[in-house]
Image 1 (cartoon, rainbow, N blue to C red):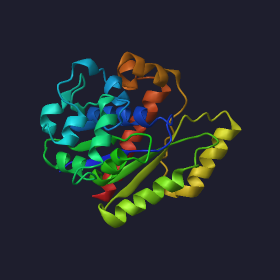
Image 2 (image 1 turned 90 degrees about the horizontal axis):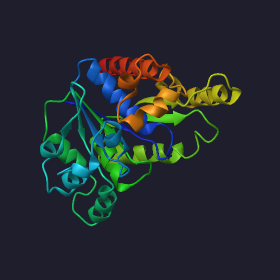
Image 3 (image 1 turned 135 degrees about the vertical axis):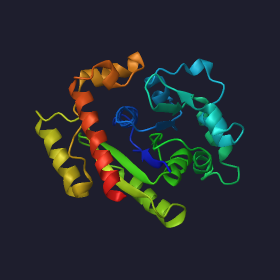
Length: 256
């Protein structure tokens, strides 16, 4: 049975989608069969893996509306072992439609239970505490929380952690924080180091040992529709995500 991990933070611009794409890519490189679920109406995970969003027969939206089977909507990528459930901006309209349907919070969980053949499912949640994010948290066993090493990093996290607590109490008692991932780290600056210390103070050993650095190659890769490991595997960003993927495997193994 696949391990399902939601990558989430209600703040935008913290490297959430970049993390989802590159963690999925490196887990696939390690020999895992990985499904990346694009649950963000911006569809950046889809375009970041080179998916042509203008030529899709089915997307996450149709799967959540239950008009299409998940297996039909999933697309193979150019990377062995890595598939994606793609998304377009239509998902924003779907979210409004879902507000009035039955089982609106468990649509994704139900869809994911219908497929097998994957070792890991990574869900790229939208940067908001929305109906879509709740679907992601209810479908997941674990959460990875990317946190930007900048001044407002910890602001708003309390609300997200409270939402996780409510989901645990209600519809997903097994939901667990797998790790907090510091992103956009610039170790040359005092601020970055201070924020990193604050993150460790708040979350202790939940913080990944590897922080994701600010890196021009990481910023460039999405515009080419490829993960950073395929764009420049020797870059600092690529090496950092490779190390994080290994740490994720170790943490999952410890949970087993």
